[in-house]
Length: 347
Image (cartoon, rainbow, N blue to C red; front, side, top):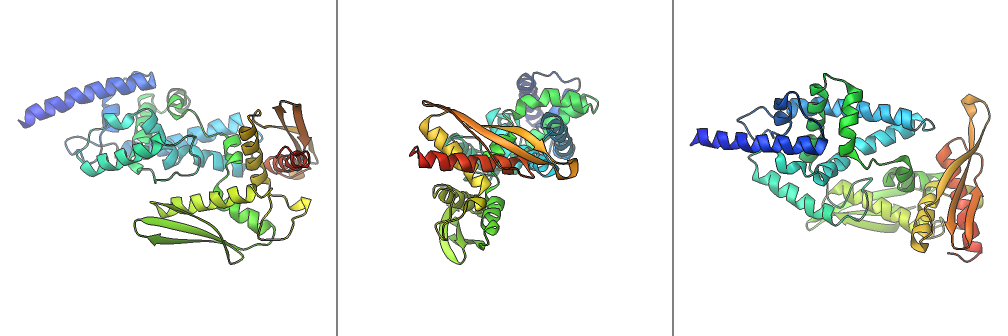
């Protein structure tokens, strides 16, 4: 009986390997690598993906770093790190596994794993846009592990040729989370703290648990501002911070807890997010940001950026102020054009 079971498992794995090869559009020279990549540690009859996952994590990080360095020459080291982190995060890779249904081809002996993956699938089905910073449910790490192990299998099969590996596996990761997406939807918690601290306001995010939900509440200068809930504490904090930024954006990029803010204290990140929402709601074209000029020496370079988009009344175009960082000048342009739209009663 055990021999028959092993034979059936081998037949199913052979079919799984063939299907995943079709997804990758790549034929393995050593198919045993992919078999290992598709074997969970709970399946004790064969070597699991754990060693491959270790290599895949490092190889993917380096491949994404190389891609970002070449594709986005204007990004500073901090923004490059944010781009890499967003595209190799557990949340991102888990959704890659869902999109390509890689979880279907993993052999395992864990009912709990199946339940956890199925629960996550239902959450992802309800998402109406690319998740940049967490979702309503924490992604199961096993899904990200599968992607990393499959990537490692390709990497090893190609004799550790990183460039060749990237050409194969990039199809899995598309669509990548781009710098534009990250600027329109920056990391909520860090952005909220930056927004508040810039104008001298103290922000605290307090988590608590009520029944089966984790609740996170945002307090600014000791006053309750907004709250959100999730099954996971960290996701609740992310959603609460995002809700706070949303509320700030809808108050014309001003805090309703403080006096009127002068033009020099506009919040760049919230302004860009608000402008993106206005354009989407009005069915105008997506805002386009461009570097108009660069001034000053290399060690103190400043940038002037513009923003433009099409409306039924024609092209809207504004240039921002000189800033030390590209995204700050883009935010300045977004703030200025939001003011103009408000004066003309567009919003």
